[in-house]
Length: 413
Image (cartoon, rainbow, N blue to C red; front, side):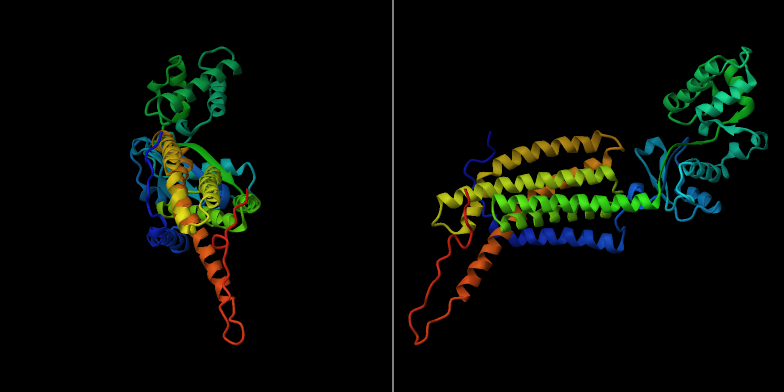
């Protein structure tokens, strides 16, 4: 299947437009990383605590920030998470608790719960002062309470009450979306909700999950992520150096660096966090962009053998046009797949799919608009440099002319 039959587009004639496009997006990303949003690292890299909180009503972010500030949780990052109808908020604290131990997860969660309960009507009700919040209780909390109260009068069987406690928490997390508004939503023996009412109250929020990473681990992950990208680029440079020539490898690596810079800049401009899954997506797009570039370079090498009398820019244009249908087919189908993942994959895959959507577009573009023009520009420069190096013989004799082999580009088999 072909979209175009014998296209004749002068790609290199539009190189200044391509250069302007790349400069605009690259500089915008650099400015955002330097002055505006910086690089919005996820908790895996920066170290800290991420708490995912669901509310019964649409949350007031300014009020949440004030509640956290009141209990000493300074400079939190608060943002809407997922669809607005979920009433969910991501609270990111810049520093973890003192020692970065496992118990800090509970400590950070309890600190956030305490801050939000400070303005929760149910928590502030004097009748609930000695009760626990069922919307933020664990299975073990409910089980221990039921065993102590023994509402079924069976001697406090831990197994039976453990099953009932899991049923209560499942009703909260699965049926009620994380926040119970009434104990009538718990479909178990009627004696169990009656007993729970004496020991628990229902707040208007639920801390669904808490992630924590110590600062040392965060720094190690940052370093390893950067090294992973650099090693992949270096390995591809060596491969293309051996398989083609050094200039081919350099052009391809510059194009991949260009793709990575624009993708990370897009995350900064959109203020989206860069997590480990995003790094995986960036490594994927580096390989994808490199594969696209190699296809074009391989066709250039073949055409150099067949079109020895043509200028290199003509050969490069013809090579890009010959591979255009293949590029549109492969890139287009891949783009539709990752676009579906971006639109319908959910919040967990949102960063990963966003990186691939940007990366596939930019990676396909750079194979044509960055790598190929750089190859031609280098060979033009080398040919001019070779011509200038030829001096006139003494006595005003004839000029000695140097005839470069296709302007310095060799065709290895």
